[in-house]
Length: 500
Image (cartoon, rainbow, N blue to C red; front, side, top):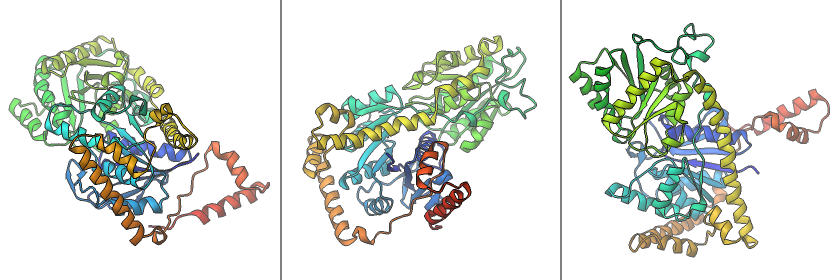
């Protein structure tokens, strides 16, 4: 059964990142499976309004003010009129929010429940429980997820963290990992036009003691990505291994510290800083290396290490969060998030490559079999089926077990207030007040901006895939091939949306 789905998050292209890639790839695969998918995010520099991406994916870039790391300023209610207009004109049935720190995601789930829409949330991050920032974030997450239909996490560690933070029933949380388009991350040994195909990093031949080994690090230069560990470890690794060089790509507030380390140790000839790298250029950077170093302090999944392994790089990473679940042990060298352990793990990885103990030439094929966005889309579609199906089954007497697996069902305001009230002595009352004000605002919008005044948007014409041949035969009854082709052409022209 096809659904009309809205993906909502502050994180989307043109900003690079794992969440952004996840939303785009998942949306594209869901469109291929016959669903209608749009993306709602905030405006970026030089990009606002409505844009169409590949495969007919429509993106609404809403002009809101961003405050920190491309996250919009929280207003709770000002987003509702625009959100309602988009949802109504696109005939949205399911609102799927991404990232717990995304303000648009949290507000969209609140408004969607007020409008009686199904909601799904995907968590991509891990958070603590002790510091002030984590306490406030966890309370906000509890507010959002106390009235959501289903939750998806990208790893089992992420699921445990999310269940504890938001006090969720584990039965309403599913684990669906990220994936990678393996064909976009091929090693040099798989590039038939590359003259170095027999001597690239993916080659099984051991590296000699005098051969240069390149270590690649691609990350956002923020504290949680372990940049301080990287800055402390690089001089020690280079001092112990004279035939090693580094390539570091990424931007962030820690970039100045990295540059100062290079100046202080006079390592300009052994460390190459690339700055910001577009996602489509990441593969070109990775294939220049032999080892990928990821010193992150917290990571729910770590898509970048899967991309690096697909490019034929041996992975050195910290054993934190969901990282140990991502790749098998023969592809990775794990380290504790400590300077000494990272230096030791990097040394072990260099020694294994020089001795030929690691078959990095096999990594690409193995990653291609392990991760697929088509599989992620199929599993996400089953979540949607469970959410919509459980709602229908409850109308006919669905039990508590079904409600636990699918999530929250009732859209009645009194039932929603009961769920919010249980979020805390003071926070529960505040959440109830927000829900009541949101409901009153919805009534005002329905009265003074009725749905009859909102223009319904035409759907983008769907591509005809191999699996749609039977449906095509039903839609076009003519038996003559030429007549059928003309009929399809007229049908596509009739359904083509107006240019924006």
